Image (tube, rainbow, N blue to C red; front, side, top):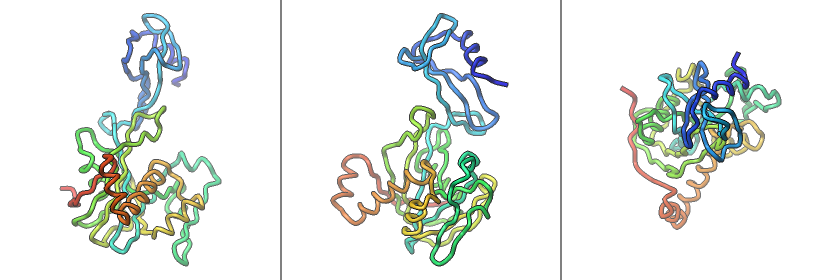
Amino acid sequence: MITSQWARESLASIIWEEGKIFPVVEGPYRYRVVVHCSANGRQKAMFANGEHNYFCYTELLNGKGEWIQQGSGIVPVLPDGRLLLVVEQRPAQSRYDDNPCLLKTGDNIIDLDKFGPHSSLEFPGGAINPGEGLKAGFLRELQEETEVDEQEALWYGCVRPVYLFGSDIALRHYSHVVFLSGLSYQPHVKTDGGLDVLALTNDEVQEAIWRGVITSGQAALTTWNFYKEVCQARKDPSFEALLQKQGYLAIEKVKIVKPA
């Protein structure tokens, strides 16, 4: 078993150098804990060249063991105004057994537990692969997680990243809103072991947030806030121009294509 004592002892073989970053523990999937040598670090430990300060945080990894530096969240908007969301399985969230799971859609009630025991209602999104551009990455994730048809779309992107877990995970998050020209999507896709896709109105999404049915910070709430800014910008040209002038908002026509 890996313990904190073992981890501290492993530092004794490392030569401390200001700014140096090195892995301490790598999990069997997705995560790697790193030590960041810094005189401003909140912790102290004995290194090969004496006692020094350091920070400790996590990197996300892809299947090749490469650091995932960036991720995306996407609000896909259908021509009729409904928004596409996916049901992911998030065991970490399900450890809290008081999460509401009944989603109101019109006159219907959907129990999210029917999709799996760890269901979380979120917007599509995911990792940007190393060497993959932001636009290419979010368009790939959108197609993979909803299987929308190939089509022209209007993209609103937040140019400024958000550090969702600023002190704990080295990850930049970018929010996007995509106004689709086609209505077609798949209610179930095979991505990540299987995702269920739902189309909800603005009011249904907002109520689900208020009732605690939608709670994921990085995969829902952050992107939802950007979506509301986009809605305001589309109604107010002066506000849209301000966001663009500040280098906050980018707008572009894009082409969604199926992966080869």
